[in-house]
Length: 310
Ligand SMILES: Nc1ncnc2c1ncn2[C@@H]1O[C@H](COP(=O)(O)OP(=O)(O)OP(=O)(O)O)[C@@H](O)[C@H]1O
Ligand SMILES: [Mg+2]
Image (cartoon, rainbow, N blue to C red; front, top):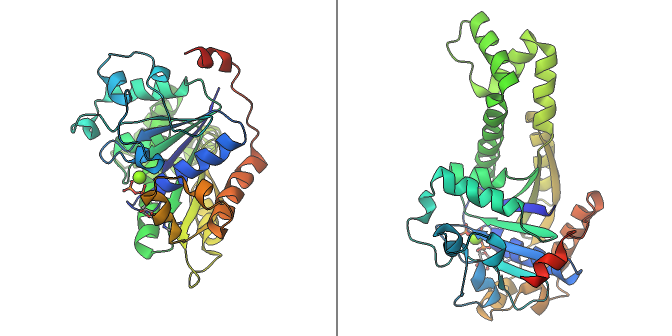
């Protein structure tokens, strides 16, 4: 099994793709096999961070069925161990993915033969984005210190959380609990946020089970574009508030400082952590990977030889 890192966030232009590409490069340098999947289906630009102008294959080949195996639409980024699945050649209609296509992509992603699979998601809270974010047991969201970004991050978290809750409620045993709660309550429909409390009141055992299921999902987050005037403790504060309000787990992975050279690295088509390896921002990115690895050990993908033959 691979580790899957979906990287999302409520707002555009907050550094999701910058972080996905650089974290991918750091893991690849450690010798892990990494694939970056561009799932920003309306605004694909992951390839640009690697100076890739055109690709021979990509997600479009998987969606138009000219290639049925997602691991065969992988391209090299030029960095050893680091590959990309680009969506740059997907049709302009691609953001309106059919439900079946989305499930097909998710299933294929879960079977990619790499140590680490990083998903670069688009901005916003549409259901496709949320389902990609929820496709493993952890998702990373990016937020910046701007109030607008914090506001959108909360919307994103709420969107993902309630979508997860709805998925759980659809499961047979929870359905029975909801029906029973509905029967005994004045409400015609028990609405999502308070359904946990209502189920717990009615059936403490089922309520506890639902809480445990929600706690299986881990929200991790990164505070990007931090500047001198910003509160360095903002991440810890957001973590506390979220852990108080939701039954899922929230972990702050760290700050990434603003550096004007990020722009320069994109212009020169060279990945930032390679071009500016010893800057405070590169140290921040390295520390985030270390923090993540502090609680997770990545096993090498067992079937790596099979991938190398492809
Ligand atoms: N730590 C940083 N320091 C300086 N500039 C940064 C930093 N992080 C990101 N940027 C800049 O912010 C811009 C947006 O970054 P990026 O494209 O990664 O955002 P995004 O969240 O993926 O946006 P979108 O939602 O449009 O895909 C980039 O031009 C990049 O130069
Ligand atoms: Mg992006």
